[in-house]
Amino acid sequence: VDRADAAGTPVDAFAAQLTTVRPALFRFAVALTSVSEADDLVQDAMTRGWARRDQFDARLGSVQAWLLAIVADQARARWRRPRLPDVHLIGELPSESVIEETAATLALDLAKAVNSLPPRQRLAIVLSVYVDLPLIDVATVMGCSLGTVKATLHTARKHLASALGATYALDR
Amino acid sequence: MPSIDELLHDHARRWREHVDAHGESRQTSSPTSTSAARPTSRRRRVWIAVGVAVAVAVAGLTIGAIVVRHGHDAQHPLAAATTPLPRPPRSQPASTATRTTQSGLHLAPNPAPSPPPEAWGYCGNIRSEADARSLVGGGEATALVEAHAAGAAILSYRVLAGRATGLQTLNNLTVPPGRYLLLLGGAAPTDYYAALGYYGVYRIAGAHAYQLCAYGVTEVKRGGVTDTDRITELLRNALRR
View 1: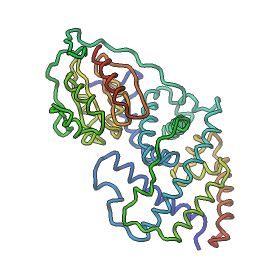
View 2 (view 1 turned 90 degrees about the vertical axis):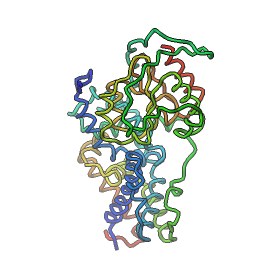
View 3 (view 1 turned 180 degrees about the vertical axis):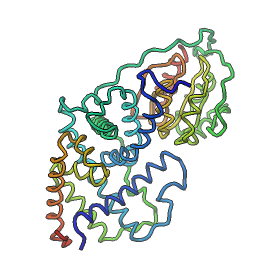
View 4 (view 1 turned 60 degrees about the vertical axis):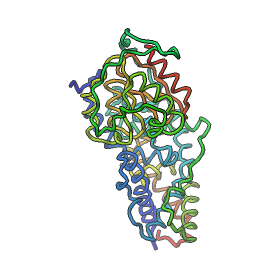
């Protein structure tokens, strides 16, 4: 079986990379949409990436960063469409889950603090901390330098500490 | 007291565990592969609740930053990845030896296909809508019955999804001219992309139906929601070729 496609790219190699980066894509997709929509979003993005893999330029960033940008673009496209009925994520938790009042309060405060960040800081936090991307990939997705990402994260953490510190007496 | 870094990273780690469990369950279709299936401590459940709540809250706002930065920056090095896909080339026409059903559907000859391994869940016994409904929900069943009557081989995503051997199996699978293979389900990454590269797999309509076009069918059809009439129409169009 010829395992190279018309673009001359070894199919197995690219498929292996897709499999490797999929968890990060899924996390990012969940952060952008929801668990229920993320799978389709990742599928669409990976399909697009596969079809355009001959346009990938390794000098501009990793495959992961390239595909993350496609995920973002796909999410943006979906966002413009009429939204499908939302599925409440809380319903996907085990039925015996107990949400304590303190936990709910912490979640609310944490969400409020993160959401109150300026968009660039919020994006940096999500990509770096939640999606767990290397900083260089964060820089590629955000279209800025590594130094700018570090500075943005530093500022974001200061804002979060400032927002939560008074309530939870966080170490500075 | 925890620092903001500790709080964030601890929360993010638990959030990732929760999200990855969903991702794995979609990829492997294994009921035992998700962390949600494991007994959870009270502390863990609390953190999961925190994670889910923050994920929901962050989701809507994060996309705004992407839109601002990525959507309007034509000079961004990744801009090429966001342009529309070109229409794929039209492939060889199907066999000309067709027959016509009472409904006017032109059917290709129906040679025996090379059946996929049983482990793939080859669905060769779809004789009625009830059979089809055991595989898919709602109105997709009607389209499946028609597709099967027209000679389509149908694989169930429930066993196909996430199988590491799927790539090789697809490579070795021979689909005769005039026959069509339907991959059902949206969680078969490796198989899905391999098929895309070798044959051309395109979503037809709905979130859970994919069409693998071996010969004669290259039209890309995509839809946001399941549309029975649309699926049937697409299948008919495909089978006419």
